[in-house]
Length: 248
Image 1 (cartoon, one colour):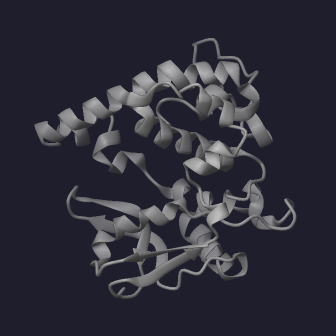
Image 2 (image 1 turned 180 degrees about the vertical axis):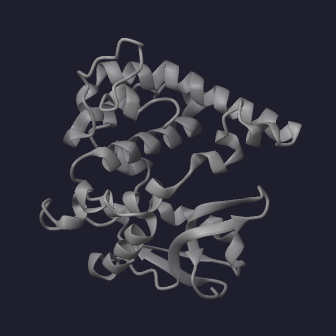
Image 3 (image 1 turned 90 degrees about the horizontal axis):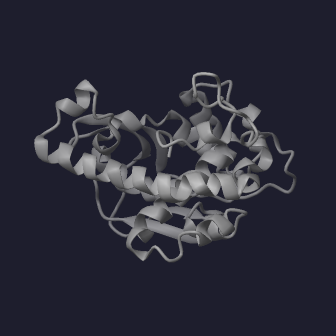
């Protein structure tokens, strides 16, 4: 198990607890458990998914009595975000969350999955290692959230499914009014970040989709054989659509 503690922090600044967003649900004895099925989560809205997730925690080995999942105001970017929030005041060095270490979503999780061959494609690109590790976790989350059954389904559908990437300056579309309203320095930072991600997607992720289709499609996450439509757009069920630059 691993535990997380934090210094005193106002509720509005609990984004730091998003480190807990790497905490995933421990696998159930049977892969047929209802909460592992994508169909168990998809029909429900964010509030219902969160309620189901929080009810699962005690029976699945997670102990987070003062942590919830909700939206909150993040003052430094002037927007509301969705993620881990403090439900009660948290004292300095107080244990916040206990999670089975073997079941956390992290780069190690990806290394120990069928994505391992994909990761080896970037072993020599040390300059992009940090960005690649973050992208690899994104790929893993996209796959686990799309497949029919996953031990990480509860956490992914209760948190990431309700997250709007357009609320974060770095991922705002450059042609959007929200992006144009940003300070020039923030725009420049966002453009550099988006350019790095685009380059990484073109150099590593797109080729990996061609070389390791089974890893990306595992569990029925997508159809690696789905062809593009007449206008060149990817089919909604295609792996190219699931792992598109916009989504990664």
